[in-house]
Image (cartoon, rainbow, N blue to C red; front, side):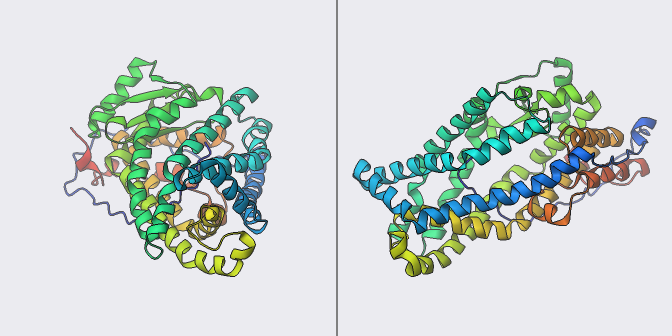
Length: 424
């Protein structure tokens, strides 16, 4: 779902091992002690990987080129002047400008979005989505972004007017409650605009998942099934929400493709994100990254406007016509620091894998679950270094399968890192 640019960031994670070793359980079934081989990427998967890397470069370059074009042609300034005539006051001018900017940018990026999100996915057999559903989802996303922009985009421009030297710090601080609110409401107000969320149909499996959640220390856990098969053939599950909106969501595709043991490992992984506080760590990560990127924008935008402001059609960073410049500078710095936040997210995904293995002790099922995830998504189990650094928010599937084979301290009676978090 396209969203206004939100920049990711970095925070340290300190996870302590359990002090007391648990009692070693009975030996696992032979099937769970059997290693899982890492399947090589199919020729189709390798083509998908290679062409995907090329399209990723295009997806980075095209928006930045568009923002630069808006600035150097004076289009952004003319759009702001039009918004002033419509809005008449400062606040409505910003709302009108941001809405118009979002719609125009959507139209400019539409061919790229259509090819990447619809044509390419069908060409590789990854999508079930009809053209009507793709258009409906795209226009719904556009509406959500317009509303979000109208509600929140005025904040940095108000702070720019109030404090030209500290606006970046105050904006980053103001972003924190917005990030929390977005995490809070997205599962109940935004996600259902695109797909239908229902209680799990398989009540026996749901009971096993809830029992696992209780053992993981997650009270009043809720599990939802979402009809993603109308859009995709790929598999996924995720955690979302905060406090009363927290939930574990399974795509119907993953329920159909994985057996019960594999699903329980996936659920153990997702529960690990909650139990280990990863949701809040990612909120902190996003907040810190926004601070870093806004500071970089503060240090660079003034000099850029001084140099080219006459050509841009504005000479004050507090002018809403500077929005493409803010996004351009933020995008460039975000691209430069991307390896750092991605390294952090790979770390927490690895720890969630460890949590899932420790709570289920099903090594073979974990490995076969990863194999199915790889095959259904045309994944490459051993991507290149540049892909891992700049694109991968999860460890490579080859590493995850290898870890599933090798990590089993309970077989030797060794302590589990997260044993203290498990209820008896």
